[in-house]
Length: 76
Length: 554
Image (cartoon, rainbow over all chains, first blue to last red; front, top):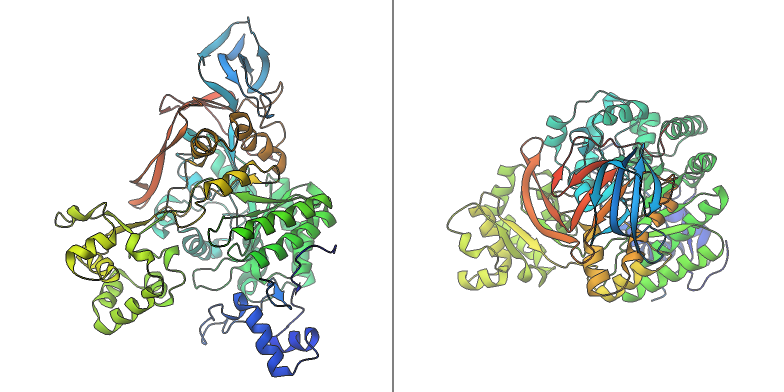
């Protein structure tokens, strides 16, 4: 990937990634709970997505394989 | 003898070069001569004072279902459009197993706001494969169709319900690749996918469960056929859009294919977003990638009544749940329930003062006709109540058939939109033709391009505007021998008055199967539309003679 102006770092999820596994991999210097919270705050488009009902076969709101996950704060 | 000569028109040939006076001759569905033509023809059209251009191409539509009951895709042709691209945003009507039909109807209903009843009463389900679907629509086709195949339906065919729960395994990936090959061999112009849409249960559509490996595997197949990838992305967020542009660029470079994302809107509160996005598009084009943003001409106007879930309420969960899942009686009961109403009013208040400017568009009762055309703020003042309460009260009084109009909800800065449309790296599209039929008219964007951005704003010349919606579109999408008035090219031709062409007023019409209605616009200033060398529309009347083609076809 070439380097561009104004790049906000992002990744695609790997395998069965969760907020915990991404934060451990991408934000290793932070405490686990703090890293998860920060990661979620940078990715409200995923974290705040409406969850499927508990009795649904798609219960919850998992991170999807196609989601863009930001690992840096907004620049603006 | 020639089949047709169009005489004395100003030929704007699609290249962007200055128009010139001359004749155009047609034989066997192709353009065979230009200039001063002495040979006789079976039919002659005098186009003096008119512009003669290639037929317009609309690259972002959802006419998939309408083509099953209306092979003209009305009113697209009367707006000068000779070719449409259905199957955008991961949704096509084929390939589709019988057991998945209602699932797809649910997705079309949720995402494209198309009534379920129209499918029930307007569609005879007699196909499964892509080839069978094309055979089915070809029986009564007037307009040219360049169909995309939807990523979500490929997944649904191969993985069934698992398509909405997990990534594909290697065996499923192989089957998906082969299925895509079959669709491309039989006439699909490319594949569409979605990173943003929700299905009828308000959960992500199947394409969103695909990982990078799957997307690349499918784009590898697109590369084998040199076909296009269309995506709908998280258009509401500039940072995500930039990331998607980078993703598309990698796909484009790796598989040597063209990609396009839609829509790119101008947000008046975040003008800088468009500059950042176009800067990234420029950077990626300079690398050799092809990542075309699609920009629509019209501003965003949204109409709604409480009986149908509206995009306008998507950020109000209580409202949207009620409108999406509640029956007619459920909705009325909720509005009349004191506690529930209090909750709805409080939630709607978070979007004040938008409600003040809503216009009451249509009611059934005589008593409320006096308020039609007035804003909710004006009506509320006469009723001594709040605007939100007024909206609810009118809806109850009209048995949920009070229709409201939210004007200019976005994409309204004509200077910015005009400069975007004129940008050589912007692709003009995103009409959504055939979809959102109860929210707004998706017809007339071509006329609006000329009236607003050629004549009023002078952002483009007539020649530049024609090129945008003819040669540029044909080139981006790989539609060979279309988009120019050159010898040997398909005789898809639009004759129009460059000083008059426009979109007409939006109005409500009941012409959808299942007694359904939709918003449409008539055209203004379109004289004649020719498809494949035959007249499809002339002086306000459709003909029976034109036969549309599948592009690229088998």
